[in-house]
Length: 200
Image (cartoon, rainbow, N blue to C red; front, side, top):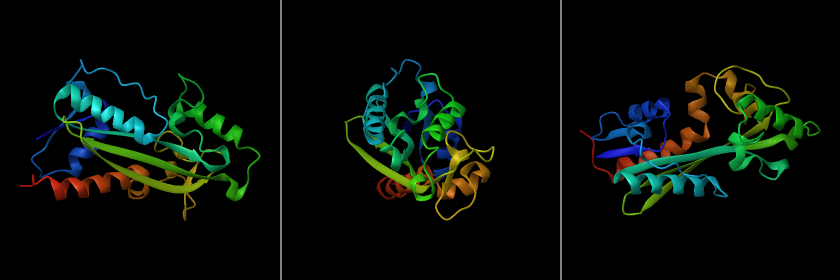
């Protein structure tokens, strides 16, 4: 069985390959399908964007597909940056600019008013249009200044609940064991392992 991952990120492809080692599955990234059309992520939710990407890729390639969308939601900001997490400070913003804008908008907020959560929705779809969604969450607090140099995005200012280090201060394995993406991936893994009889 071939599953196309709706990403050109080689690290994501390798991560999923490791998770499904020993299964009769061939994973391909979008770089194997250069004619695959770009999907505009204009959904109002992470789930809507992930479904749109997964269905577009499986429909175009004729293979099963996996897509995800994720981001940060701050309670005191009405759920912002939400689906705009990657472009919070503008269309061409980088991680540093996004974090700077977030901290600026939260400068007067203290303690529990800085509650936030990371959200990840992963979608597994088939060429016939059927799909299954898997969502993972991790709650925590937004710090007042960046700390740490690992990870990406808002990791330097996010303290997962029960921890006194940001995601950017943790190792990859530590973060993966707690993260929204890791939790969504585990749900998808259990589903595919139960429903696809592909193991050696």
